[in-house]
Image 1 (cartoon, helix red, strand yellow):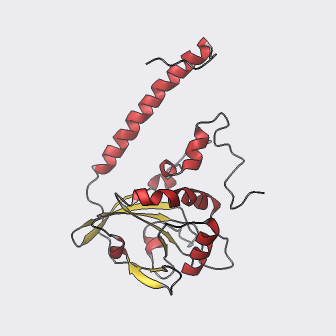
Image 2 (tube, one colour; image 1 turned 135 degrees about the vertical axis):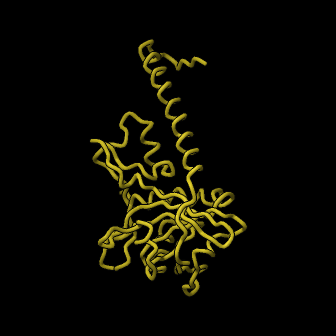
Image 3 (cartoon, helix red, strand yellow; image 1 turned 180 degrees about the horizontal axis):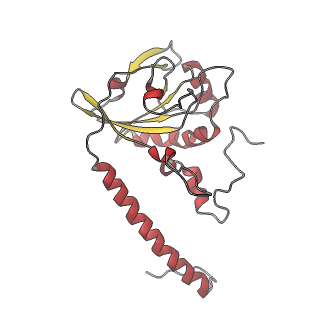
Length: 227
């Protein structure tokens, strides 16, 4: 199929066709990587049934275990580590994480038809809920890991305890829960001008900018508010 947009030049069309071939190669590679991910050998068994804090409908915080996050017969659980520190004198919620979660709040009802999804942060439940209310989030399952070692064990924080953005996938096999995959690209070396891009496939913001002539740029990042 040969497309031609109004008033485009022959030089543009030739360059666009060359780029299209690279986009096809990228699509092919993306599918191959996803297939390789699905073929991974069994991951490590989760050694403890982590206890998180949650609050539903403004009630008193209650405990929920990792095993209880597998609901409605779905045996896959995706957890995103939200960079939201525990201490009140620390920095507030990460603007980039927040921008991504803004989009995921609307998508999570669709996501939960196939897999379980939760957002974990070191911040207290009350701080998480206050931020969620400010953002207008309605559907995200927000959990506090302030009282367990989940973040440390699954690389949601560094050696100093500072939060890191991390995506982990777990699978349940009967009574056994295993780690399936984590976004290790975050720690992989990058070439000049590159970003880790470890969770970019689920982030609409940066993917949108990649389609534009300005690209992502190097002097802009998401903010919690705009004047």
